[in-house]
Image (tube, rainbow, N blue to C red; front, side):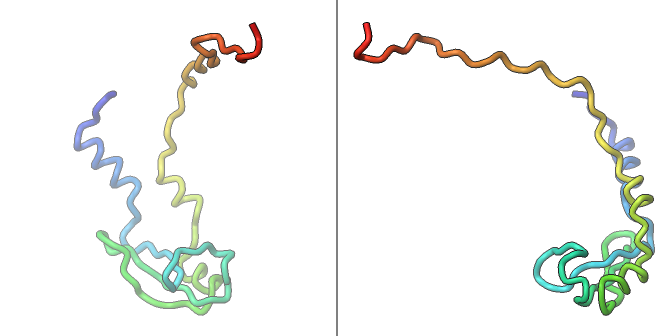
Length: 107
């Protein structure tokens, strides 16, 4: 396996991190939930301060929170590099028993 240098890793990590001041919405409650789960429930708004996501406000529902955060999924997704896929490994040989099994009543 090829090891990458610490500088290369840090550069790759910085490319994936959010920009300072970028906002995202977060569900309020004990568990994570998608936008389709109770879209009329209030949502929290968090802002990236360069080190962590900090709460900055609350929106009345999902649509208000999405407008406030400026959801721009394609540009955010573009920062996350997809793994490169190569040729698939060869398929394993089919399993065959190592000894011949016979029923006791047959000769």
